[in-house]
Image 1 (cartoon, rainbow over the protein chains, first blue to last red):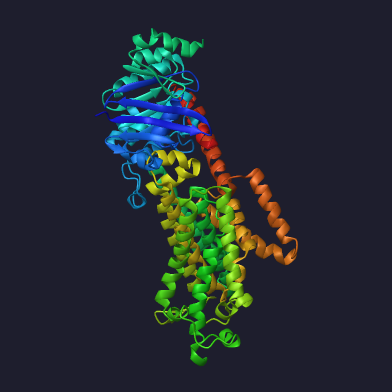
Image 2: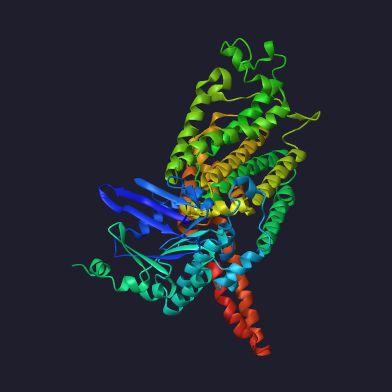
Length: 242
Length: 382
């Protein structure tokens, strides 16, 4: 059984079906890329998995548990982590504080009221190293560069130790070298965690994707490797119009 | 992180020195002055309570006077009973005037000082818990929280004014006994009493600082910025909001109890809208991000009021209003923000001076200081 299973998922925004009868399976440790023209329902699909949006019908099963209608914080506790398109780190907190915050394995009030933050744990040090923010630990997130902000958010997902990483355009606005570095980070995570990425940058997709699902008008248009997708005439016509 | 802890320790020590040593030295050990200053400290405590919920978690509670007033009445009920033992049925005088036959059941337990002290903390907290659960589980936020808390405040005050037979109505509770604790009667004009209030404020300062520095405090600061993002990390944000809302109410209740001891009466004006809004102004003046800043804001504004309201009886409220507008426009982070930027400016000047001396001495230093100075100026901008 796949780790993430989506069955006939539909969401209706007052007559407009952003996601329409979507079926999707993601295996454990897999890196899946979601492609599709604007308005295909890629971001909405991520919203439905992480709980930002509630579906009209259908089912989301993660690790054998149905999470379709759980509030977002409970899904996060199941191990679903989300990186938003617009980087949403806590700007008025430092890098270190953002990561401490994301380390939310004990999210209860009582567990946290008596916890004073001491030295960063080894795991945290390692994460800061992975994304190259070790020297910026005391810098407020609002003072990071755009690329660093994106990496901080990826680092937060790692610190959160989620099993499923949902990433919405992780390379948006990055320079070429920053994009490469992001690809390297994802490569490193591949196999360790299940990742679903929405991305437009085809060079990046070519680099990281093993399997690609193309969405069109809220449902799956094509699935396969990068080669299959690039040579698929239906995909071409969906992107270019008739 | 250790440097923040050190800063906290230093600022609490400075605050302690200010209220324990400097105040009696400057204002004299005269009973009246000390009592007045003890009053300011109580108001400082309630401002600190608001800073905890508003500054840390971004919950603007316009009804902070409600738990304060409840604490004040709870203490006054005990002292009133202590002064009514010779009355028929041990009943407070005003109840007799209202033709109430026997002491109501909810007055009975306030014979006990232990119960009174606990109730003064827990009743406001429980009330805040109930209201907070309603507000935060419903994911109400921002200006709507302010409106609901204000409405609750008005309702509670109305209840206290209307139920004259049980609460003394518009007159409040007057003719109170002095507090007797462990057989010692505490004179509210004595130096010891002043120290009792000062020590209470310091204990609250330490506890509130610990809360704001815990991981729960970190979550609250995250909630202030973006509650939805905090939810995606797995935090049930409403629980944290309810916690800080209740703790803040308990502190306000404590301040209210002390306030009754200082003034020797409880009045429904403690729960008035204008008093509640004043707390917000004190917080803004002192700087809501800092607990001690908020307390100092309350103390400074009330000292000014004490001096100026004699001179400009009617115009004082105008002065307060202008002060508030000026602070919001020119010092959005209050006196605390001003102090932080002055300190940072001094520090970077220091650094610059070291940098120039290093230039002549060691050639390697300037490059180093040049690489650190951007971060210094960034943290000054924070």
